[in-house]
Amino acid sequence: MSRPFALPDLGEGLTEAEIVAVLVHEGDVIREDAPLLEVETDKARVEIPSPMSGRVEKVHVAPGQSVKVGTVLITFADAGAAVAPAAPAIAPAAAAGPARATPSAPTSASGSPPAAPRPPAVPAPAVSRGNGPVPATPATRRLARELGVDLRSARGTGPGGRVTDDDVRAAAGPGAAGSAPASSPPSSAAKPLTAVGLEPPPLPRFEQWGPVERRPLSHLRRTIAERMALSAALIPHVTHFDRADITDLDAVIGRNLEAARQRGVALTLTSFLLKATALALKAHPQFNASLDAPAGELILKRYCHLGVAVATERGLIVPVLRDVDKKPLIDLAGELGALAQRVRDGKATLEDLRGGTFTLTNIGALGGTGAIPIINYPEVAILGVARAREEAVVRGGQIVPRLVLPLTLTFDHRVADGADGARLITDLVRLLEHPERLMLEL
Image (cartoon, rainbow, N blue to C red; front, side):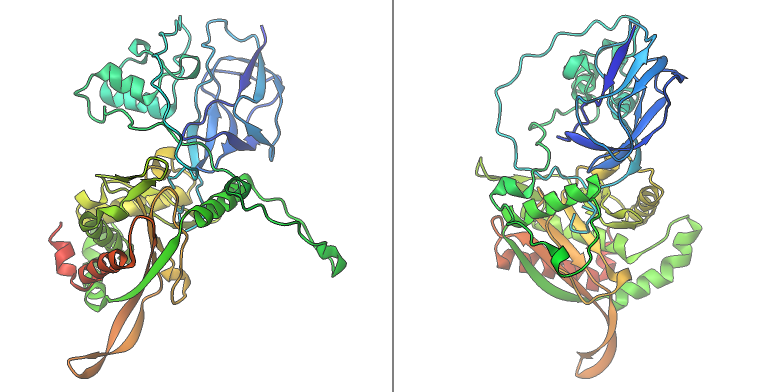
């Protein structure tokens, strides 16, 4: 019995992926959950496992090909009849993301206007699964293990009866950790520049002036281009510049480097920047938000998940550190180091790359005196950090050398005025210049 396997619903509003590698050959006999293909979306490079055991009859795709959800990838022969009809979702393998510091590293953002509210759907009846596998994403399976839920007992409301995170939480009961349902439907995939009415004019024939070379954009780069154009076109950006004297903070870091290293932690300026930013955002919640323009509402997020740009060979990826405001500095530094290494090693998961509320991009290691980053839609603000330099500063009537850090806060002028941005960055500077206030949060 032949059975086609199509690109499953990728979640997060993603509708397309690029085939990076085909991991099986025609004629191979494979088991359920064995890796089939590696694909790249705008969120991550991920591995798609087999939904069934059987022999690969035909491979319909090749590396470099872009495919949409529902496209047949592989046809199986001798596939078991008990296999559930719904394709299981992908298993995260390697990170990619909105590769720009503006967002993680641009990371967690869908890059499209919020979807219009829809009337509540009638819950789908439970799908009879027989003895076949329960269709669910690896993240959902992990959540089920954490909450002690048997996936076979959960009512699958996803496409074709796929069990979703909400189904697992519902099966776990209202008292389970993290069981709160999502408050809004996922937004759609990023739309191209033409979607906001800014279709570019035709390009001239550059060949008339000399030789040219055309290089196709990767799926990731095309998505980045769309996201950046969307953000720049939809959001009225305004940027506030300031500088922080981090001489004392640098001394604190230097004095504690060895102690942190003995605990397996690399103490860096970025961890202090993240902590200071989280504390400043608590006092200025309109910057830790998203704008629902059609509804005329500002969605204030009562959690602080900060995206941070990480440079990789594939580009700038933006993983997300969760609950930064609640974590001690030493724990935050350790988590930041581990997360950055997972991204560089290509082992970050989709969960590592989504859910951010505000983005930090620190280009200091690469030089420069400042930068104006583009906001990671649907966030409303981003902090840019350049290289700290020793400068001559007047203090107490004396010219003394001090280490000065350039900062730029770019934000959505629809949700905040210039004075609001100035107050936020002033509080941030104050925290960085008085590191003992950050240490009190340990």
